[in-house]
Length: 239
Image (cartoon, rainbow, N blue to C red; front, side):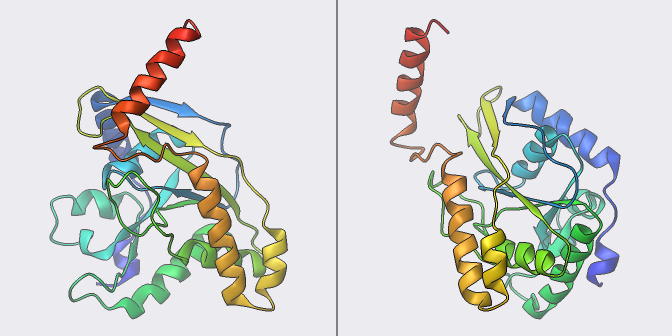
């Protein structure tokens, strides 16, 4: 099965169910300005596996397409939802039996979507985890933004911090913090001369912006202290 046949346009019923599930299980809060129109890359941390895309779509305010590992498109309990969500498959080397050379198809699909003015969300850490810290970012997001912009299809980048109070607790709070778009025209100019350096510089800039939107804390050791400080601060402010 090709990437083209795996990928469909986003079906409204998929995201309606996802929003209902997320809003039922969590108390969802959104912080930040409305997203701009046109070609957009949303780049978020990835603390909660398959739930993170649903949180993003619930709070984004516009239709978003996601990248998902190719193994989710077939023989998985959620395959029917993944295929109908509008997701674009990513072929990861770490997945058994996956041909990573097919990521040429993934980059082509993303570039086509961005050229059409769509919003794409990536989790540039490349994996979901509950470490409480931002992992070293992969370079794919930077390559997509720089390639598309250098070809005459400017792409805005918006970092998103996903902050779960207790990811497995019913009616706990999750806060999606949408940052401001940021300039990288200087890096686009460098990209034409040295792609590797430009990709590295943009990846570092994205990482810095993401960290500003997250509470980086060890879930087992630090979050109880953060919660106590939050309560004391709120009490002092009369909130």
